[in-house]
Image 1 (cartoon, rainbow, N blue to C red):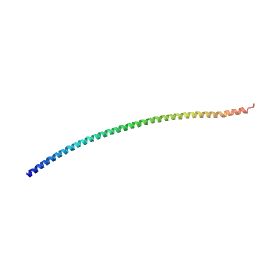
Image 2 (image 1 turned 135 degrees about the horizontal axis):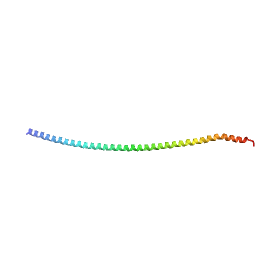
Image 3 (image 1 turned 45 degrees about the vertical axis):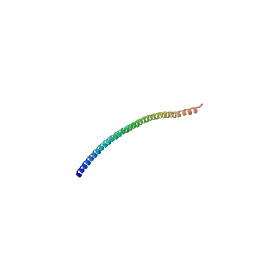
Image 4 (image 1 turned 180 degrees about the vertical axis):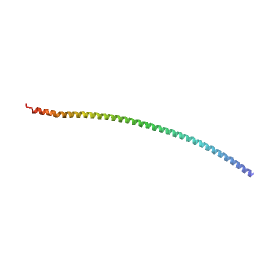
Length: 122
């Protein structure tokens, strides 16, 4: 009877062990599926976040580029305006200097006339 009981216990233990192993495998498979699903979700969330970050960076870069273009255009306009002002001033100075030189050139002749008129007998 003891041998039969021992064989029965062994058989029961093997059956119980097989059930435990099968349950552990099922639980491990479920954990792996759950982890894979979670990892897939995390990867997708990371992809979406990366895409959002890239879109924001592009929008920021586009804004900076547009502002830089505006500043460049304003700068070019201001340079052109200042070049025109410089040209206008140069022309004005040339006219003024020419007028002054004409006055200086005519001043000795006028002085001569004034002196000649005084030295004539009256």
